[in-house]
Length: 330
Ligand SMILES: C[S@@+](CC[C@H](N)C(=O)[O-])C[C@H]1O[C@@H](n2cnc3c(N)ncnc32)[C@H](O)[C@@H]1O
Image 1 (spheres, rainbow, N blue to C red):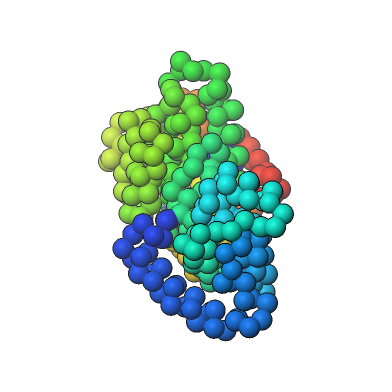
Image 2: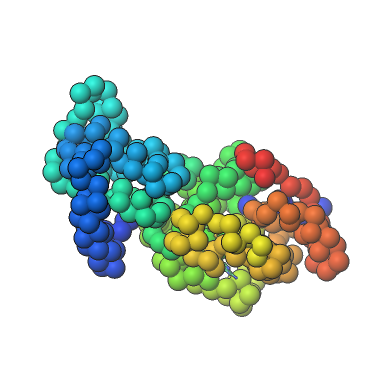
């Protein structure tokens, strides 16, 4: 949804020490796992034939009720072999023979997936729009519908057409940096301030900003939105964009294990009605927006009407302009 100011009518697990320990643990449990399944169809876990091995894992993940089993194994295979080699291997009918280390690596990563670790954390990277970003638990994994939020902001502010016009924005809750880094890298005239209350998120956004070579056009702060005003001083923005934590209390019990066990709850839980952080953002918005400025928020399906009512009752100097469904019709 978007709102405007009243004046004028959006792992690599192996990389860290902790993750290394985790991998060692996984290696032990993988042995145990092999014992359990040896002697039946799962004997192919010892195979170095790519097709046999990946088919065994797809079957095992399905049996373990892991969502998107085929896709998970595909992403893991691409991560281990590289996309081009995976595509070439797919063409070989009798199957491609892996090196021993490659087969071991594939086994380790698929085993993590079996334990419901999100595939993005398993492989330590994920694509968002045109970027490939590093992913590290427990920082929120960017969702595909958020790519549409970036598109909406860009379209509304004509960013593609106004290459010479400066555009500055504030992102509240940058997570891995998906939103702000996409805008910065797609539109070279843009600058941003990005904040997050999670230290892990700020660290990951910083690493991803370096990876995307846009660090020179952003300021990044580890702060809660409730304490951001003194940091911003007199800065004014063309837009405030956020995909805040917005899950209402009643929905928290229904999250998939991938989300509830591995992602930061502070990135998800939005309070009783899901609007705690949304309200904090709206409270400060009109004071830090330029004339013609806008606020773009990803929210729950139950929120637009409540937000509209709330801003009218609070006299925040904002008007509600519209809500857009994402590609899942939410
Ligand atoms: C749903 S995630 C979105 C991350 C990223 N923008 C994305 O779309 O992938 C929400 C983010 O907001 C941060 N956050 C939650 N409450 C916050 C607060 N009060 N102030 C600042 N950041 C907050 C969380 O740490 C988390 O990184």
